[in-house]
Image (cartoon, rainbow, N blue to C red):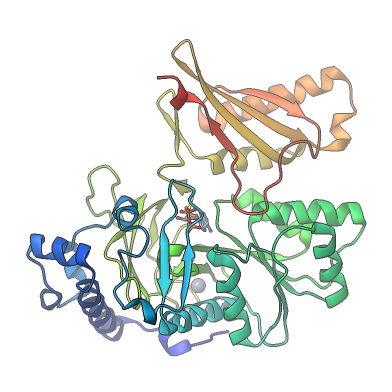
Length: 430
Ligand code: ADP
Ligand code: ZN
């Protein structure tokens, strides 16, 4: 199902022309921001130099540091009175970035969310529970207004009070939910304890943090939903910039609203489809806060074969952000890879934590992982076997040696928003 079939499936010259026009407009809009005015002047590039979308490579990059230097309102391209809302990033990597929206921006954003939800089969017949934080985090109001635009019955439940959330699902006949994958897992656990099968449920939209294919299997099984991946960031309005279609094979980036590139994070050099690197995004329709070649820090690649649904460019699921990547004795590891290995083992429970430290100048990684209750009550020797198996599997797949502690089910922290599963203590010891 399509919300805006013509735009979603635009191809060839029509798409190229539209993207070039939007890119030119975005550069003009950016010139209203003193930071960009100077940056573009220094580089000797002006909006009229942008004839084709390929001309994007002439433009300079923007980094998170640049945005932070403009805190709070330095990147707004419109007078403050035209800003009708403000959000901030969750500040995973330092001081939060402030983003602003004009009325038109909010309309554009709702349109994208409406496309996503329609793409996975949701309609005005659905009842939608939005179990994310409704504050400054973009996932709350962003999804909320998109779902209302489709005409769904929206339950703005927010996070917390998990038992009540589950009662609402059953009492109100909720068919679709949006939350972080970590919170979805917690909901599943509590639902199990409460003895409900959440029969009305059919669609889960999960995002805001990396999650693995094995996590998808677990969530689909435990919640009896089809689970879709939702990607975005505050700088691109919020969630919904890219979303999985029913093929569940990569996330479509809305090609009329964003231009995407993949670069080598070290050299800044452009990479080809299929090559993994850092995602760079240029939003094409943002009025309040235009951005040029924004370096997301997120690692992925462009999938260039055509999807049966005929929508545009797809990216592979994000494995992590470049600043999330752990380098353990020279080996690059993303927490999502650890999750993938752990979730492939039937004995392993729901949560894990990773601790990295430096002992005698050597990196040491320790993983605390919950074990399912039925395995926990067994003999000590059985537990040792499980522990060895986990260590072995991690070494086989990730090529690293780790220490593993088995802990009781439900003993590790649960996260309602973005999970913080890695504690790296090496920085304290230089
Ligand atoms: P912050 O950068 O402070 O966390 P945001 O709340 O805007 O601010 O979060 C955006 C980031 O969240 C992205 O850059 C990405 O790292 C992560 N993210 C969002 N959705 C996903 C997803 N589906 N898969 C993996 N990572 C995601
Ligand atoms: Zn598709």
